[in-house]
Image (cartoon, rainbow, N blue to C red; front, top):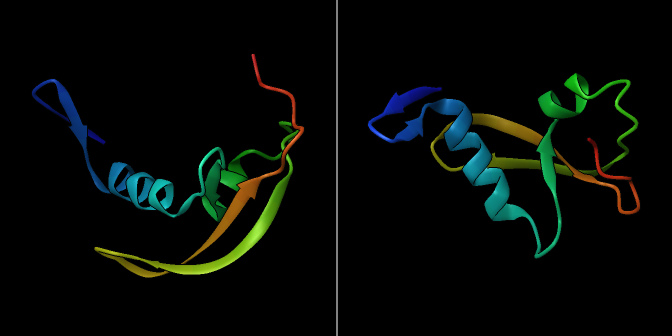
Length: 73
């Protein structure tokens, strides 16, 4: 991630934007990277399959955060 004036950019921001665009209203989606980094957090994920993300090489396995999981913090 990098600052561009008052904005941010970079591949992580681009991926997050693409994943967000695939979520339904009220749904929280994550890549397998986020799921793997969340081990031990108490979050549960539902596999939503693989997707191509425009402008990002390869296929990405996506997950929805399972409903009913308490908010962190």
